[in-house]
Picture (cartoon, rainbow, N blue to C red):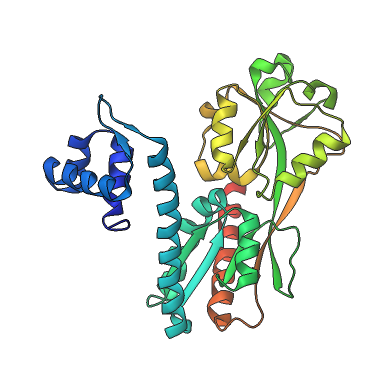
Length: 316
């Protein structure tokens, strides 16, 4: 019963209200309550504290949910891998980061699926360190991202050079008011790195491909952040920047993925410092022994075409 109807537990955890959760699940509240009671009795612990409103998740409940998510993910991978073994030429597993994936996958899949309507596609959004590991283990067909190195001999194809820059809320006063009107992601101001020391930073998770660029920035300029908030999704980090919680090193796709307009960015300053890494290379990586070479090459070609087309539209 541990795995049975796990969606019931997830829905209750999201709603923190049995009536709303039951409505979302299209079942009665007594049925949902009975299921939770049976599961908690089997586990010998409380997953939810239902003595007050809204209900809350217990420490044991948080642990159960996180571990069951891992089991659920492993089961989906198992099913996908079995299907791929049974019919390898009719499935494609793509590993890509969260931010880049949310922007690029909707861009490329319509055109790719039009050419390959019968191909099953699985998109797995990892941290980039996990993409490299999945490629090494043969768990995915194609990895897309910014990678430091690989243990094995993989094919690597350049996709784009991504612009890197720093962003901060204007409350930090890093850009003079007289120059702010001309300041945007396409027109960066250069500031002294000394202005960044003892300022709070929003930093990428250590598994993110941008983390090494952040480390290089603070090491070269001897910057000592007053505080750091680490996030594994750079779009989340940018929202924290908008709240004035810190300075962030980001890449162009973060802004593109969220489709920000000029009004969203009026309270932000965009800048760089001397000797800072200004671009990073995003690549497509795959094994030369992969049986899906044709599908992989078609996907990469389609992605190149869609990215080029989007760039042309932005330039016109």
